[in-house]
Length: 216
Image (cartoon, rainbow, N blue to C red; front, side):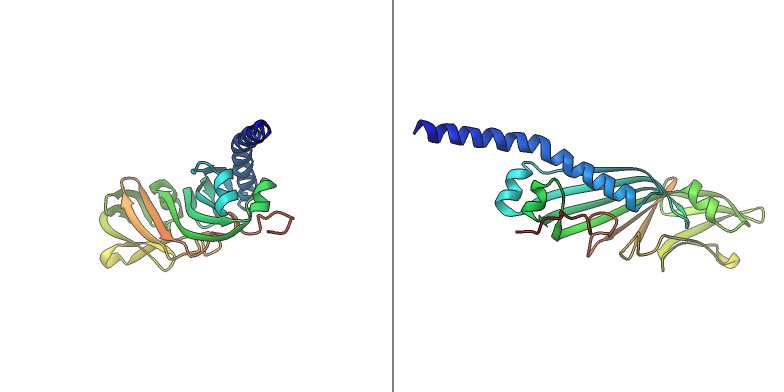
């Protein structure tokens, strides 16, 4: 009986140690992978927001919540101030977790949120459009010396400013390699927020980030 108690205690100690050691290894591995795949990102941060991680994966094969944030992404189309990918209900390979890696098998849901500032949008607008000012739900711009109000929409992969009789002006957004879902937008003070629901996790996050060992 004493040996059984000691064995249980040893197992609990080992599991507790794994909960301390393994999650940071997973987060670091995800950050390194994303930094390689998206070198134009100024910084990458990955956070596992579920506890316990190791015990849950060993028992159910799932991690509940992973958040990855990319800041200051200098895309050729337009600079993106921040991108956040929020993934929930992740089924993973148990063996990959033991190796300190994430082998994504299936997810319940994922959402992408991004922010582009008015300064970065203005830099990309046509030369005759200047002094962009973003307000909740609308914008003001100066065209040929005239300040006009503008509706702002996100459609067909662009942020579009409706300048009335002066026509439209738009800024192209990164394509499906970066935003792999139909984007919606919201104009707030000084920025445009983009968001969408993901059917799959972007390749630069988890796909091909796998253990060399076969999944059980």
